[in-house]
Length: 388
Image (cartoon, rainbow, N blue to C red; front, side, top):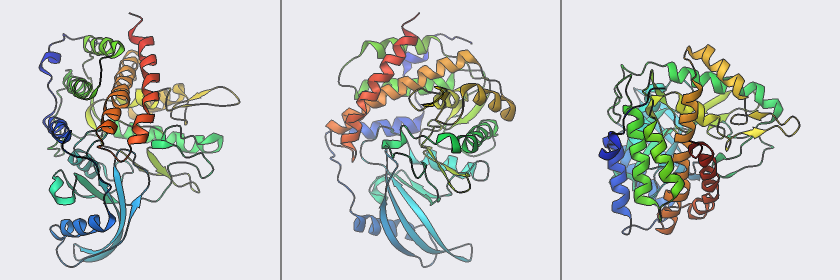
């Protein structure tokens, strides 16, 4: 692992699009209280939004609130419209930001990545997006509706997909696809695509992790109610050990169980979801995230741990290296495990409770409840950063 000096921490440099959403977050605080969007109001705004983007007549029908998407508010609707001279009838999803989210990200980044990755890995088709809250009442994206389930029919449904398990029947079917799609994502050449909402990190530098850490540090500084010694220790540990990236990949940022849809009858993964944390960086970020203890499952009979309740750690590394042609480094996995747990702790004990207290979210009870998971990550962090 290549360690670098701690120069970027003092500048607090973040990507411009991330800076914009963090500034908007502070502007809303104390001036905005979340109100649940009324379906009729959403329908009117949606019609006005689409009238500026669709040539010709169109009809919206069946708009309804959609369950899931814990950090966003979602609506499903039918659209009868014409595209490229052909009449279409599509089911679509409107994905909107509440005033306060545990994940403050620009909608255009998610939109650009989904457009780029269509046909590369299974993702919903992205149609339109806006970061202007004046258009739909909040930054929003419209994408195609993909059929499928995030969990098995018989499985216990959980908040935000946490604790989603698949069992011994589905593991050997879904697990190889889960690893294969991640390998395909990381080896994909994004460099020739137009990604105006992203900064492009230079290979063999710490650009990507510098921007990532600076953004998480800033979220903690602006959202936390009080300082915490484990957070301070983790920040120093991470900045002191930043590795230069050897291969810049598209990083999903939230790649785990519960964040993909599948058809239970065929066993096919139909869509990878929740791309709001996507960025350009080190593949070990996604690998370490999918392997985290908090997402996985210990088989009740054998005690074997399954990463994201799908595949053992050894199987995941071996298959990923074979399919991607990219090596997996154990030291980088540990580093990005700390990166992921640090981000999770900040979101769960800093940003979530702040949003709930400021009444900026439709999920105030859940974001307060998940603070307990943040305490778990603080304990996990201390076992690593406290040993040196």
